[in-house]
Image (cartoon, rainbow, N blue to C red; front, side, top):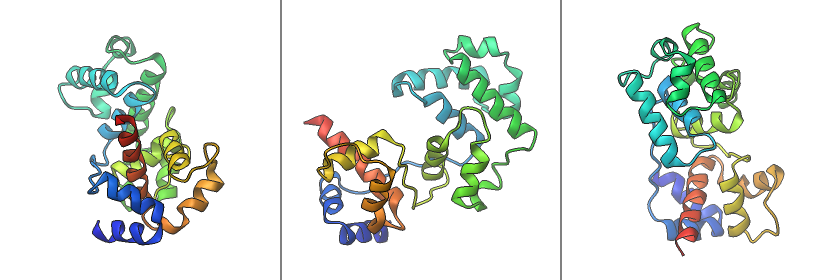
Length: 200
């Protein structure tokens, strides 16, 4: 990853300053499996602490085997009692059904292009481009993903590049052009730069 960080430092002075203040790159990865995507759905639009509790209950309910088969053995009402919303129950069950039925194969995703991964994952209810991009970054370890729909990235860009408003995708692509092929690494640093501001 030294090559990526070195490229970003040289290609963008603003990002170089962020890298200096944040410190060493330390993205935490998860395996590119069914369980990781279930976790992403659980974490959508709720605080991290609440999501961890709900995911822990789900994990306990299936004896630490978060598989399509185990999920489908649970009744929807059982899943609701774990703290999952009606929508998230539907999303997780749709993911389990598509995986169990062979419409979605996690085995083929590591060899697929970014676009093909996004297309495969977004066929599942409740999985949009943002969730698919997070899977690309944090599970498949793709280094050149720019999540233009992520509010944190937009806010970090606005602050770092002194923009009057939150940037829209075309402006974000323009700013990120020098980062390629390491947009994921740059995005991690932008997220961490907000941690620093929050601490002030």
